[in-house]
Length: 216
Image 1: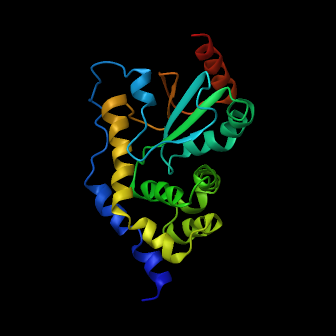
Image 2 (image 1 turned 60 degrees about the vertical axis):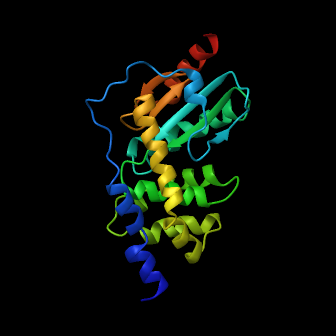
Image 3 (image 1 turned 120 degrees about the vertical axis):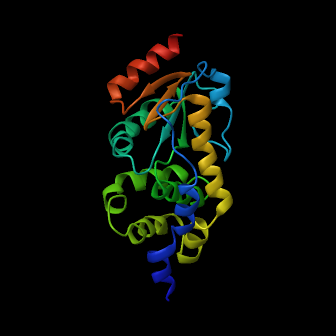
């Protein structure tokens, strides 16, 4: 078997096997109380990938899945405006946390983590922009690898990344923490200075909530 055949046929088996044993959120689960802002801002099991000034007046934490079409819509249509107007100007600190809804989404997050320092968000945005090419096809590995190559991964490092049990455990731990501690039960879910919002937001909707959070 060639290495390419391995990538196309078995690269996600480790991810799929481990993910299958990790139950998703139960719709009947209810939090005893809302999480505090301090709890939310505590770094996740893998360490948070942060954009923006550490002391920005507004913190946005997003829980997303790489195979979520609503998440892709937000990242393609709304996130670039958020980044330009608020993150890059020091008004918002933004954190994306992994909440994979399936093994393919978990694998995509692992690829982003393997992209190297400073490339996590670039890889995330590239995968969201190209989501239709890899997330909903019969064999997602070749198009996913095509994206990964743009961020320094070759066949060997791509295979090694998707076989990294420690990283997969970390991704699943981020998801589990979001479920059990913060009440995340769908994607995308946003916390804006601790206040929860479920579902994709347009830029005007997001601006309204940023303004309200800045006044509170």
